[in-house]
Length: 398
Image (tube, rainbow, N blue to C red):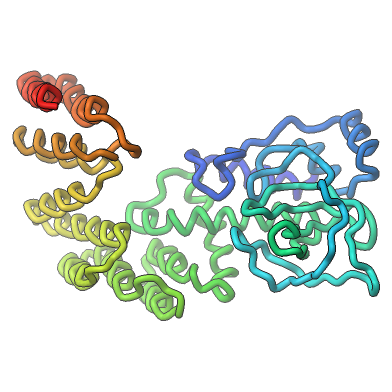
Protein backbone atom coordinates (compact mmCIF):
# COMPACT_ATOMS: atom_id res chain seq x y z
CA UNK A 1 0.00 0.00 0.00
CA UNK A 2 1.38 3.41 -0.92
CA UNK A 3 1.71 6.09 1.80
CA UNK A 4 -0.98 8.14 0.07
CA UNK A 5 -3.46 5.27 0.07
CA UNK A 6 -2.56 4.44 3.67
CA UNK A 7 -3.37 8.04 4.63
CA UNK A 8 -6.71 7.81 2.79
CA UNK A 9 -7.57 4.57 4.59
CA UNK A 10 -6.80 6.20 7.95
CA UNK A 11 -9.06 9.15 7.11
CA UNK A 12 -11.91 6.84 6.09
CA UNK A 13 -11.54 4.92 9.35
CA UNK A 14 -11.59 8.24 11.20
CA UNK A 15 -14.83 9.24 9.45
CA UNK A 16 -16.36 5.93 10.53
CA UNK A 17 -15.37 6.65 14.13
CA UNK A 18 -16.79 10.18 14.29
CA UNK A 19 -19.92 9.44 12.25
CA UNK A 20 -21.33 6.18 13.65
CA UNK A 21 -24.89 7.18 12.72
CA UNK A 22 -23.91 7.84 9.08
CA UNK A 23 -25.05 11.49 9.05
CA UNK A 24 -22.36 12.70 6.64
CA UNK A 25 -23.63 13.08 3.08
CA UNK A 26 -23.71 9.70 1.32
CA UNK A 27 -22.71 7.66 4.37
CA UNK A 28 -26.21 6.28 4.81
CA UNK A 29 -25.44 4.10 1.79
CA UNK A 30 -21.78 3.11 2.26
CA UNK A 31 -21.43 3.55 6.07
CA UNK A 32 -17.71 4.36 5.65
CA UNK A 33 -17.03 0.68 5.00
CA UNK A 34 -14.45 -0.53 2.47
CA UNK A 35 -14.91 -3.75 0.52
CA UNK A 36 -12.63 -6.69 -0.30
CA UNK A 37 -9.57 -5.60 -2.35
CA UNK A 38 -9.11 -7.10 -5.81
CA UNK A 39 -6.31 -9.53 -6.66
CA UNK A 40 -4.35 -9.87 -9.92
CA UNK A 41 -6.99 -12.13 -11.49
CA UNK A 42 -9.74 -9.64 -10.63
CA UNK A 43 -7.75 -6.79 -12.16
CA UNK A 44 -7.14 -8.82 -15.31
CA UNK A 45 -10.87 -9.50 -15.60
CA UNK A 46 -11.66 -5.79 -15.24
CA UNK A 47 -9.13 -4.84 -17.91
CA UNK A 48 -10.53 -7.50 -20.21
CA UNK A 49 -13.89 -5.73 -19.91
CA UNK A 50 -12.83 -2.07 -19.91
CA UNK A 51 -9.31 -1.96 -21.34
CA UNK A 52 -6.22 -0.75 -19.53
CA UNK A 53 -7.05 0.97 -16.23
CA UNK A 54 -5.36 4.17 -15.03
CA UNK A 55 -2.59 3.42 -12.54
CA UNK A 56 -4.24 5.15 -9.57
CA UNK A 57 -7.55 3.38 -10.08
CA UNK A 58 -5.74 0.04 -10.34
CA UNK A 59 -3.97 0.76 -7.02
CA UNK A 60 -7.23 1.94 -5.46
CA UNK A 61 -9.20 -1.21 -6.21
CA UNK A 62 -6.25 -3.36 -5.11
CA UNK A 63 -6.48 -1.63 -1.73
CA UNK A 64 -10.10 -0.52 -1.24
CA UNK A 65 -12.04 -2.81 -3.60
CA UNK A 66 -14.38 -1.65 -6.36
CA UNK A 67 -17.29 -0.58 -4.15
CA UNK A 68 -17.84 0.89 -0.70
CA UNK A 69 -16.75 4.03 1.12
CA UNK A 70 -15.95 6.90 -1.19
CA UNK A 71 -17.18 10.20 -2.62
CA UNK A 72 -20.89 10.96 -2.69
CA UNK A 73 -22.83 7.70 -2.24
CA UNK A 74 -19.67 5.60 -2.42
CA UNK A 75 -17.56 3.84 -4.99
CA UNK A 76 -19.71 1.77 -7.34
CA UNK A 77 -19.15 -1.51 -9.11
CA UNK A 78 -17.42 -0.59 -12.41
CA UNK A 79 -19.77 -0.15 -15.33
CA UNK A 80 -19.80 1.63 -18.65
CA UNK A 81 -22.31 4.51 -18.83
CA UNK A 82 -25.41 3.68 -20.81
CA UNK A 83 -24.63 6.70 -23.00
CA UNK A 84 -20.82 6.50 -23.36
CA UNK A 85 -20.43 9.45 -25.75
CA UNK A 86 -20.90 12.69 -23.83
CA UNK A 87 -21.28 16.06 -25.49
CA UNK A 88 -18.88 18.34 -23.63
CA UNK A 89 -19.41 21.88 -22.47
CA UNK A 90 -16.60 22.12 -19.88
CA UNK A 91 -17.49 24.62 -17.16
CA UNK A 92 -15.06 24.45 -14.21
CA UNK A 93 -16.87 27.26 -12.38
CA UNK A 94 -20.24 25.53 -12.42
CA UNK A 95 -21.83 24.78 -9.04
CA UNK A 96 -23.53 21.43 -8.72
CA UNK A 97 -27.06 21.22 -7.30
CA UNK A 98 -26.37 18.63 -4.57
CA UNK A 99 -22.77 18.84 -3.49
CA UNK A 100 -20.27 20.97 -5.37
CA UNK A 101 -16.91 19.29 -5.87
CA UNK A 102 -13.77 21.36 -6.33
CA UNK A 103 -13.33 21.75 -10.09
CA UNK A 104 -10.01 22.32 -11.85
CA UNK A 105 -9.41 24.10 -15.13
CA UNK A 106 -9.28 21.68 -18.05
CA UNK A 107 -9.89 22.05 -21.75
CA UNK A 108 -10.24 19.48 -24.50
CA UNK A 109 -7.93 19.59 -27.51
CA UNK A 110 -9.17 21.77 -30.34
CA UNK A 111 -11.94 20.06 -32.25
CA UNK A 112 -12.61 17.39 -29.62
CA UNK A 113 -16.21 17.14 -28.43
CA UNK A 114 -16.43 13.86 -26.55
CA UNK A 115 -14.74 11.95 -23.76
CA UNK A 116 -13.35 8.60 -24.92
CA UNK A 117 -13.70 5.54 -22.74
CA UNK A 118 -15.33 6.17 -19.37
CA UNK A 119 -16.66 4.13 -16.49
CA UNK A 120 -18.99 5.25 -13.73
CA UNK A 121 -17.28 5.70 -10.35
CA UNK A 122 -20.06 7.10 -8.16
CA UNK A 123 -23.63 8.33 -8.02
CA UNK A 124 -23.64 11.98 -6.96
CA UNK A 125 -27.39 12.11 -6.42
CA UNK A 126 -29.90 14.40 -8.16
CA UNK A 127 -29.06 12.86 -11.53
CA UNK A 128 -25.29 13.40 -11.46
CA UNK A 129 -22.45 10.89 -11.51
CA UNK A 130 -18.66 10.81 -11.44
CA UNK A 131 -16.85 9.29 -14.42
CA UNK A 132 -13.31 7.97 -14.68
CA UNK A 133 -11.71 8.74 -18.04
CA UNK A 134 -9.92 5.64 -19.34
CA UNK A 135 -8.30 6.79 -22.58
CA UNK A 136 -7.19 9.86 -24.46
CA UNK A 137 -5.52 13.07 -23.23
CA UNK A 138 -7.66 13.12 -20.06
CA UNK A 139 -7.06 9.50 -19.06
CA UNK A 140 -7.01 9.10 -15.28
CA UNK A 141 -9.07 12.23 -14.63
CA UNK A 142 -12.49 12.25 -12.93
CA UNK A 143 -15.30 14.26 -14.52
CA UNK A 144 -18.79 15.10 -13.26
CA UNK A 145 -21.51 14.05 -15.68
CA UNK A 146 -24.76 16.01 -15.62
CA UNK A 147 -25.89 15.23 -19.16
CA UNK A 148 -29.19 13.83 -17.90
CA UNK A 149 -30.07 17.03 -16.05
CA UNK A 150 -28.13 19.84 -17.74
CA UNK A 151 -26.57 18.40 -20.88
CA UNK A 152 -23.02 19.06 -19.67
CA UNK A 153 -20.03 17.43 -18.06
CA UNK A 154 -17.24 19.19 -16.19
CA UNK A 155 -13.83 18.32 -14.72
CA UNK A 156 -13.92 17.26 -11.09
CA UNK A 157 -10.46 15.98 -10.10
CA UNK A 158 -7.12 15.42 -11.80
CA UNK A 159 -6.90 11.87 -10.53
CA UNK A 160 -8.74 9.26 -8.48
CA UNK A 161 -6.58 9.92 -5.42
CA UNK A 162 -7.28 13.66 -5.62
CA UNK A 163 -10.98 12.83 -6.02
CA UNK A 164 -10.86 10.84 -2.76
CA UNK A 165 -8.88 13.55 -0.95
CA UNK A 166 -11.42 16.18 -2.00
CA UNK A 167 -14.19 13.94 -0.67
CA UNK A 168 -12.44 13.57 2.70
CA UNK A 169 -12.26 17.36 2.96
CA UNK A 170 -15.95 17.73 2.08
CA UNK A 171 -16.91 15.01 4.56
CA UNK A 172 -14.95 16.74 7.32
CA UNK A 173 -16.64 20.03 6.46
CA UNK A 174 -20.04 18.33 6.57
CA UNK A 175 -19.26 16.81 9.98
CA UNK A 176 -17.63 19.81 11.63
CA UNK A 177 -20.36 22.22 10.53
CA UNK A 178 -22.83 20.20 12.62
CA UNK A 179 -20.47 19.19 15.42
CA UNK A 180 -18.51 22.39 16.07
CA UNK A 181 -21.02 24.12 18.42
CA UNK A 182 -21.38 21.00 20.58
CA UNK A 183 -17.63 20.44 20.74
CA UNK A 184 -16.96 24.11 21.50
CA UNK A 185 -19.36 24.09 24.47
CA UNK A 186 -19.19 20.51 25.78
CA UNK A 187 -15.83 19.32 24.47
CA UNK A 188 -14.95 16.43 22.18
CA UNK A 189 -16.57 13.12 23.02
CA UNK A 190 -13.59 10.96 22.02
CA UNK A 191 -9.96 11.02 20.95
CA UNK A 192 -11.23 10.46 17.41
CA UNK A 193 -13.16 13.71 17.54
CA UNK A 194 -10.07 15.52 18.80
CA UNK A 195 -8.10 14.22 15.83
CA UNK A 196 -10.90 15.12 13.43
CA UNK A 197 -11.19 18.65 14.85
CA UNK A 198 -7.50 19.25 14.19
CA UNK A 199 -7.89 18.10 10.58
CA UNK A 200 -11.15 19.97 10.10
CA UNK A 201 -9.62 23.22 11.36
CA UNK A 202 -7.18 23.20 8.45
CA UNK A 203 -9.95 22.35 5.97
CA UNK A 204 -12.23 25.12 7.25
CA UNK A 205 -9.38 27.63 7.24
CA UNK A 206 -8.78 26.86 3.55
CA UNK A 207 -12.45 26.82 2.60
CA UNK A 208 -13.79 29.85 4.42
CA UNK A 209 -12.53 32.51 2.00
CA UNK A 210 -14.38 31.04 -0.97
CA UNK A 211 -17.23 29.57 1.09
CA UNK A 212 -18.30 32.12 3.72
CA UNK A 213 -21.05 29.83 4.97
CA UNK A 214 -18.32 28.22 7.09
CA UNK A 215 -17.55 31.45 8.99
CA UNK A 216 -19.78 30.36 11.90
CA UNK A 217 -18.07 26.99 11.99
CA UNK A 218 -14.69 28.73 12.05
CA UNK A 219 -15.96 30.87 14.90
CA UNK A 220 -16.84 27.79 16.96
CA UNK A 221 -13.41 26.30 16.31
CA UNK A 222 -11.94 29.50 17.75
CA UNK A 223 -14.40 29.39 20.65
CA UNK A 224 -13.31 25.86 21.48
CA UNK A 225 -9.77 27.19 21.97
CA UNK A 226 -11.09 30.17 23.99
CA UNK A 227 -9.97 32.73 21.44
CA UNK A 228 -12.85 34.99 22.30
CA UNK A 229 -12.03 37.93 20.02
CA UNK A 230 -11.38 35.72 16.99
CA UNK A 231 -14.59 33.80 17.61
CA UNK A 232 -16.68 36.97 17.88
CA UNK A 233 -15.11 38.39 14.73
CA UNK A 234 -16.01 35.28 12.75
CA UNK A 235 -19.56 35.26 14.13
CA UNK A 236 -20.03 38.90 13.24
CA UNK A 237 -18.68 38.32 9.73
CA UNK A 238 -21.02 35.33 9.33
CA UNK A 239 -24.01 37.52 10.21
CA UNK A 240 -23.02 39.98 7.48
CA UNK A 241 -22.88 37.41 4.66
CA UNK A 242 -25.65 38.42 2.20
CA UNK A 243 -27.21 34.95 2.15
CA UNK A 244 -27.06 34.45 5.94
CA UNK A 245 -30.18 32.91 7.47
CA UNK A 246 -31.65 34.61 10.57
CA UNK A 247 -28.48 36.68 11.03
CA UNK A 248 -29.58 38.68 14.09
CA UNK A 249 -30.85 35.70 16.07
CA UNK A 250 -27.88 33.51 15.20
CA UNK A 251 -25.39 36.22 16.09
CA UNK A 252 -27.18 36.58 19.43
CA UNK A 253 -26.94 32.80 19.90
CA UNK A 254 -23.25 32.74 19.03
CA UNK A 255 -22.45 35.61 21.38
CA UNK A 256 -24.51 34.00 24.13
CA UNK A 257 -22.37 30.89 23.81
CA UNK A 258 -19.20 32.95 24.04
CA UNK A 259 -20.53 34.52 27.24
CA UNK A 260 -21.61 31.12 28.59
CA UNK A 261 -18.17 29.62 28.05
CA UNK A 262 -16.51 32.67 29.61
CA UNK A 263 -18.68 32.33 32.71
CA UNK A 264 -20.58 35.56 32.04
CA UNK A 265 -23.95 33.95 32.65
CA UNK A 266 -26.09 37.08 32.87
CA UNK A 267 -24.60 38.32 29.60
CA UNK A 268 -25.48 34.97 28.03
CA UNK A 269 -29.06 35.24 29.31
CA UNK A 270 -29.39 38.76 27.92
CA UNK A 271 -28.03 37.73 24.52
CA UNK A 272 -30.46 34.81 24.28
CA UNK A 273 -33.40 36.99 25.18
CA UNK A 274 -32.38 39.38 22.42
CA UNK A 275 -32.32 36.51 19.94
CA UNK A 276 -35.73 35.25 21.04
CA UNK A 277 -37.42 38.58 20.28
CA UNK A 278 -37.82 37.46 16.65
CA UNK A 279 -41.22 35.74 16.52
CA UNK A 280 -40.51 34.16 13.11
CA UNK A 281 -37.55 32.01 14.14
CA UNK A 282 -37.10 28.52 12.76
CA UNK A 283 -37.78 25.85 15.34
CA UNK A 284 -34.14 24.73 15.38
CA UNK A 285 -32.81 28.24 16.05
CA UNK A 286 -35.35 28.88 18.79
CA UNK A 287 -34.51 25.57 20.44
CA UNK A 288 -30.77 26.26 20.29
CA UNK A 289 -31.37 29.63 21.93
CA UNK A 290 -33.46 28.04 24.67
CA UNK A 291 -30.89 25.30 25.17
CA UNK A 292 -28.25 27.99 25.77
CA UNK A 293 -30.64 29.86 28.08
CA UNK A 294 -31.28 26.69 30.09
CA UNK A 295 -27.53 26.09 30.42
CA UNK A 296 -26.96 29.68 31.54
CA UNK A 297 -29.70 29.46 34.17
CA UNK A 298 -28.26 26.22 35.52
CA UNK A 299 -24.75 27.67 35.64
CA UNK A 300 -26.10 30.76 37.42
CA UNK A 301 -27.88 28.61 40.02
CA UNK A 302 -31.34 29.60 38.79
CA UNK A 303 -32.83 26.10 38.84
CA UNK A 304 -36.51 27.08 38.66
CA UNK A 305 -35.89 29.26 35.61
CA UNK A 306 -33.92 26.44 33.98
CA UNK A 307 -36.78 23.99 34.63
CA UNK A 308 -39.28 26.40 33.08
CA UNK A 309 -37.15 26.66 29.93
CA UNK A 310 -36.81 22.88 29.72
CA UNK A 311 -40.59 22.60 30.00
CA UNK A 312 -41.02 25.06 27.10
CA UNK A 313 -38.54 23.13 24.99
CA UNK A 314 -40.31 19.84 25.70
CA UNK A 315 -43.69 21.38 24.88
CA UNK A 316 -42.43 22.12 21.37
CA UNK A 317 -40.52 18.83 20.88
CA UNK A 318 -43.28 16.89 19.13
CA UNK A 319 -41.06 14.43 17.25
CA UNK A 320 -38.70 12.96 19.86
CA UNK A 321 -38.92 11.78 23.48
CA UNK A 322 -35.47 13.02 24.53
CA UNK A 323 -36.49 16.28 26.20
CA UNK A 324 -39.68 14.80 27.66
CA UNK A 325 -37.70 12.07 29.37
CA UNK A 326 -35.13 14.56 30.62
CA UNK A 327 -37.91 16.75 32.00
CA UNK A 328 -39.47 13.76 33.77
CA UNK A 329 -36.09 12.77 35.25
CA UNK A 330 -35.52 16.33 36.45
CA UNK A 331 -38.91 16.37 38.16
CA UNK A 332 -38.28 12.98 39.75
CA UNK A 333 -34.93 14.17 41.07
CA UNK A 334 -36.97 16.76 42.95
CA UNK A 335 -39.41 14.04 44.11
CA UNK A 336 -42.12 15.66 41.99
CA UNK A 337 -43.83 12.54 40.65
CA UNK A 338 -46.96 14.44 39.61
CA UNK A 339 -45.19 16.76 37.18
CA UNK A 340 -43.02 13.91 35.93
CA UNK A 341 -46.18 12.02 35.03
CA UNK A 342 -47.68 15.11 33.43
CA UNK A 343 -44.58 15.53 31.26
CA UNK A 344 -44.78 11.92 30.09
CA UNK A 345 -48.51 12.12 29.45
CA UNK A 346 -48.06 15.26 27.35
CA UNK A 347 -45.44 13.44 25.29
CA UNK A 348 -47.70 10.42 24.80
CA UNK A 349 -50.45 12.63 23.36
CA UNK A 350 -48.19 13.98 20.59
CA UNK A 351 -49.07 12.01 17.46
CA UNK A 352 -45.57 12.06 15.95
CA UNK A 353 -43.54 11.73 19.13
CA UNK A 354 -41.96 8.50 17.84
CA UNK A 355 -40.87 10.20 14.62
CA UNK A 356 -43.89 9.03 12.62
CA UNK A 357 -47.59 9.00 13.38
CA UNK A 358 -48.19 6.05 15.72
CA UNK A 359 -51.28 4.98 17.72
CA UNK A 360 -51.48 5.93 21.36
CA UNK A 361 -51.08 2.23 22.28
CA UNK A 362 -47.49 2.60 21.04
CA UNK A 363 -46.87 6.13 22.32
CA UNK A 364 -47.84 5.57 25.95
CA UNK A 365 -45.42 2.69 26.68
CA UNK A 366 -42.65 4.40 24.72
CA UNK A 367 -43.15 7.50 26.87
CA UNK A 368 -43.61 5.90 30.28
CA UNK A 369 -41.84 2.52 30.30
CA UNK A 370 -38.18 3.67 30.21
CA UNK A 371 -38.72 6.01 33.17
CA UNK A 372 -40.69 3.38 35.10
CA UNK A 373 -37.86 0.89 34.54
CA UNK A 374 -35.31 3.40 35.83
CA UNK A 375 -37.35 4.02 38.97
CA UNK A 376 -37.68 0.29 39.68
CA UNK A 377 -33.95 -0.20 39.16
CA UNK A 378 -33.32 2.59 41.67
CA UNK A 379 -35.62 0.97 44.24
CA UNK A 380 -38.32 3.63 43.91
CA UNK A 381 -41.16 1.11 43.46
CA UNK A 382 -43.89 3.38 44.84
CA UNK A 383 -43.09 6.12 42.30
CA UNK A 384 -42.80 3.54 39.53
CA UNK A 385 -46.25 2.13 40.32
CA UNK A 386 -47.72 5.64 40.39
CA UNK A 387 -46.48 6.31 36.85
CA UNK A 388 -47.56 2.86 35.69
CA UNK A 389 -51.07 3.51 37.00
CA UNK A 390 -51.19 6.82 35.17
CA UNK A 391 -50.13 5.15 31.94
CA UNK A 392 -52.85 2.53 32.35
CA UNK A 393 -55.50 5.19 32.86
CA UNK A 394 -54.46 6.96 29.66
CA UNK A 395 -54.70 3.74 27.67
CA UNK A 396 -58.09 2.82 29.18
CA UNK A 397 -59.46 6.27 28.39
CA UNK A 398 -58.54 5.89 24.77
